Length: 334
Image (cartoon, rainbow, N blue to C red; front, side):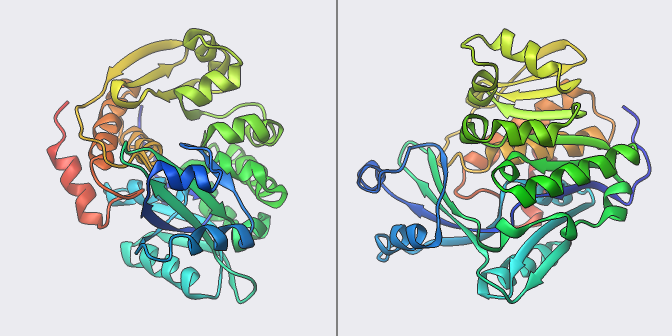
């Protein structure tokens, strides 16, 4: 695929969250009635109660959110990334903007003094599984007013996280941004984000997808859930009607790269997984970076498998420093 001149390689849209990462055991998840391995949206009172039970744990803070992690990866791999989001004028909001600003990622959107910024408790168990509870805070009010339409129209790819399907205003922003991208002949891409989005917010995802997108990302569980089947070939066929380019992650096994109906399995890389948080976000960022720079779909998937394997061997939804991504890129051998 030929790359085309653009101000940004990827313009992302999604929630601005500060991830608070804790190591817990399964007893905590059971006691707090949290579905292991899934993301649950909660209100402020609930997340405060969950955090209070962890008062003797010291969390690690990272500026994140699903699409935010993907755009950060694109930029850190050497691309050009921008991100529309919404934060409040509080400690967490300033922390988010400072981390992204220091990394060189352009941000657009509202950062007023109302409410509280979003946060996500990321709970890691000994089996490297991650369970997330998210309080959207100011991100719940993300809307069309937070878009930089010129930035979207001047990008190679527009990328949006499926989590916005849970918010009426966020969904409106996603639909408007996709329409702006389509008018500007910008390649559109979306991640289904989490099985809970497919189950509970399918209609919102359908609105966001419109008549289809250029590139779709999901994991195996999300694909099977979307198609209502236990056969991956059926899921691939259904999702290929939505996007000519489809990537389905298969955990440690690798991933499927589907290009205009042609499916190719791309092997994974051995890794001692300690935390699977953000693996799909890293994968999407690596694919988009490689595709912008001319890689074929299967080649891009190979690099993405390697990047995701490197990430899950460390704690956190993304790597700490931009330089860490460059090291991954330098170590990769097809």
